Length: 102
Image (cartoon, rainbow, N blue to C red; front, side, top):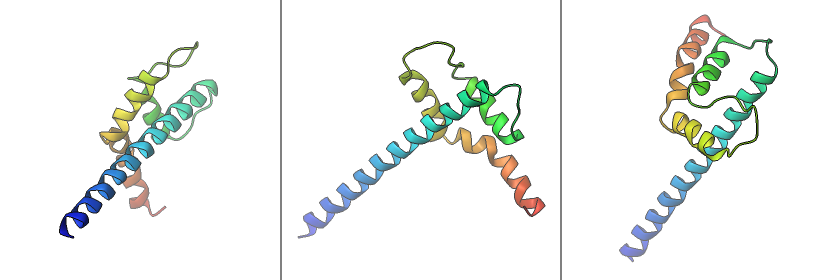
């Protein structure tokens, strides 16, 4: 009985970990798409926070000028997401927003 409980708990934890990995991958793909749209809409600008995220991503992934395998790009942005680097990039801007009362 105890072994069944431990096994179920382990499986739930493993499934939760898989879900987090999938969510991080989806976020990485959405960030890549957003960065590409920013490139296509230049010279228009967006907020300073989003421009900073764009610049951070572009240090690891170049603009899509032609067809190429996208997996290495997804992996590069996924590393930024899962390491917390993207959150760190916008943390300063978010703290300014909260301090200003917005």
